[in-house]
Image 1 (cartoon, rainbow, N blue to C red):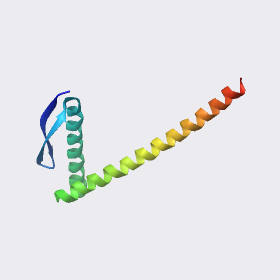
Image 2: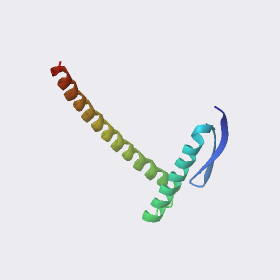
Image 3: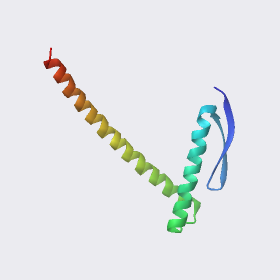
Image 4: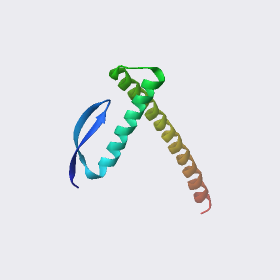
Length: 94
């Protein structure tokens, strides 16, 4: 696994980094998505300050992360319940 030296531009600043080759595409996509969200908040709410824009994107990202974790835990709980039912059915069939 080779490493690449790349630069990701976020909020009009370049950030050099060394990444594994298989991670490059994902990191470039993240950079594009961040810049899109920054543009959204700038255009939608007229926020000009870069720090405020970055804070809004960070906040939005954490809200989405927590929601995804809650959804995942709910799904895992349902799967666990279904597995218990299946296990009970299999046990009673013996």
